[in-house]
Image 1: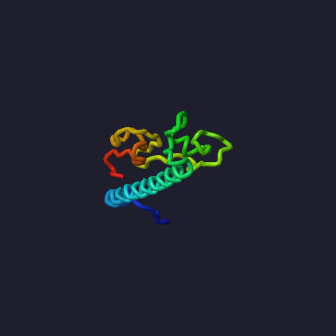
Image 2: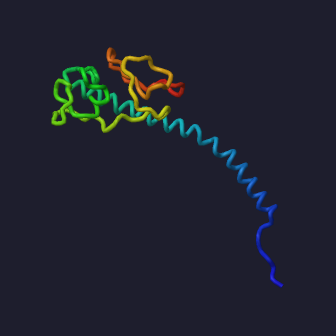
Image 3: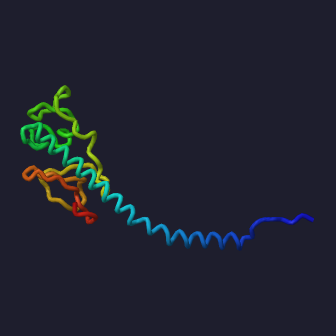
Length: 143
C-alpha cells in the first residue's frame, strides 16, 4: 500500500492565513519609503530645472525662459534658441533639458506661469517676476 504524501486543505488554509497576516504587517511599512523617494526625485528635478533656468539667463542677457514673445517656458528650455531667445533649430543655445520632468506627486509636467502655487492642478509653477520655479504642491511637500 502506497502512502499518499501532500498537504491537507487545513494546512494550506493555515499557511495562506499566516502569509496574509505577514503581508498586512509588512506592506504598510513601504509607504513612507515611497513618499521619501518621491520627495527626493522632486528635489532633484527642481535642482535640475533651476540650474537650467540660470544657465538660460546667463546665455540670454538675463532674460527668463518663457518671457520672449511666442516662446513658451518649456520651449525655451527644451528647444534650441538664438541669443535673443527666439526658437531656432540651428541656434547656438540649448536645449537645457531633454523634457520637462513630471512632478512625482501629481504626475503632471505642465507649467503655470505667474499663477498661484498650490492645489495640484499643474506640475510646476514659474514666477517671471522673481524667477522662482516651484513644484505645484498639493499637500505633499512645501518645495
